Length: 637
Image 1 (cartoon, rainbow, N blue to C red):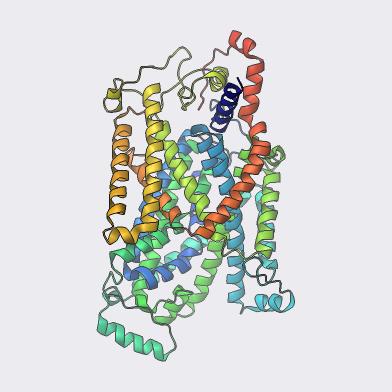
Image 2: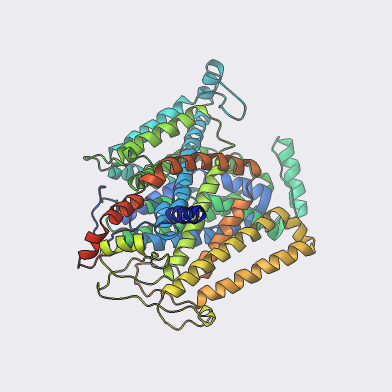
């Protein structure tokens, strides 16, 4: 009897972890102010993504990894980022609510995955905000001759190696608190300031690109050994650091260098996901969010491509200054005063990037608190400004203190885990939801289905249909794996895709682990690694074909990811591979952060979750709910 009771309790506990959020999308009511246009979302995405990296990253990758072929690095990175962007765009059209990847995970793969995603997004935004604030302070200090850092280093030193910074950064503290006040004041005011910073940044980058093509020398894209020796000797006499020659030409470090550079450049496109948190503040989210994501990524690609091309045309790749590439490039071509234009652009880029990091953070916290996974007080919205005031102030204070006191270099890689995990889960969610059956019923019936239905029935899509429509059911047969009998999704086909996606995700994770940790052995012809990779690829291929053969939903959306299931699966592969490249220390810090998060979830969230409360209420009132139901058809997911 006790073993049966234990089994029943374990089953009940497991169901709690994977219960899914049921959303009623029939109403557009929101506690926020719907005031953001499509242009506002594009500016927000560009400002968040096109940060100071465009002024620094191009120099480092060109000198050490790719040379002139850096333009291809940015192209490959842009394509990889667009795959994640397309998945976000479809979900933005499907679920126009605040919460981004957190909410997308909640409605598709369950509560525990949603909490994991949201908790890591919070960490990413906090560290991102603090690190960009310190970078802004450092850039401004550099422009005025390092007077600020010298003063505080001499008078308020508090350095504790790998923990505390050399000195408290009062400038970064003030900057974060100032922008926190701006965000709390109103979203339209924040969007206006962001548009100003982003416009100035784009104008400066346009100047850099045009100047590069005017003053550039095509010979720098086909460097010979003789040219390298002549320029190197001149540079060494002037005390300039000279990089490696490689093999010269357009691909001085080979195609391997292009791929390595592309992996680095991928992080330059991180940030567009902040657009997905505006679902309740955009005027027309189902149209504006997909357009905002795709257009902002396109603008960022053109900017990165143009700046990297201009840089490598003005200066040979081996003479690029990796710390200050653009000012030194203009000095090299005789336009030294242009360094001040670049300085203004970099400060505006950092300002827009800082706003882009701070804007989505309180909205993710609000969404989690509104769902009961974090403390309810964090979901309070100011009645006048229509902003998540408590979440904005709390997240701003924490970020300000991080920027004020801590050494953040060792924590920056944690941002990557949170972002890449979110990208992967959104791709998984798109893949699963596209193949699920459409269920039409009232919102009350949906709630009853969440409590009493089978796991297959709980996968619910955004659809508006008549309440008397029934969903197709069929018995499972092995033939249905490759030749399903229906042309629209059924419970069986939905379950097959759910399991197939899980299998492929596991195979990809193991494969990426092998490639990241034993890549050299594989290249050298290690039989064991080759056989393991072949088996993993084989299983993945079979599961992919099974998913592809299942019927897709006919539901019309303003945007859909093309070429399913290949594009989401490739996006998952890229994201997981980059996660596997991170060092062991980063994964240990990630484990500590998750331990803190799970303590909050199992101590508070699992009991106060909105789905837990709905379950308790409907279980208590089950006879009443079964007797009366709302006959009007609602839209739910």
